[in-house]
Image (cartoon, rainbow, N blue to C red; front, side, top):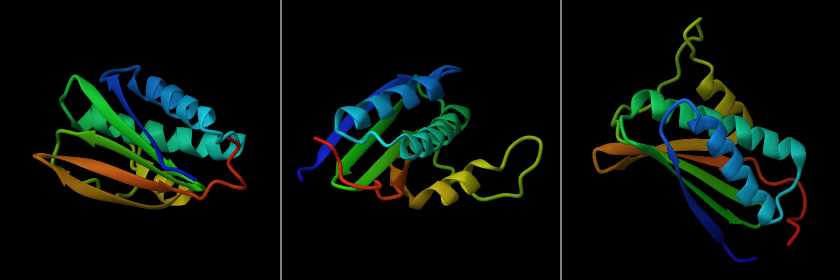
Length: 132
């Protein structure tokens, strides 16, 4: 199966997480990734990454890249903050995002992105065959 990729830029702001969820899941569905439970997990991860990018970055948009090949999918979200996300004890202000990403993905890592960063998340393998 060939590799597919899609770059999405959503305007930073209050509606960015919802718009990102919509565009990411629409892309995956178009490529044949249509398992509802798996897509729900993708939506949660997308929301967490984009919310963090909006809160901690200062750009006008949030760049998102989705790369899929077979059952493997990589989701990447960049921002212009060099601060690397750290796990912390959850409280009334947050701290649950990385716990959710840990639970719903295979792994995640951060890469320097010219003064900012890009958070890459390897999603759980797609359950079953990808419809074409």
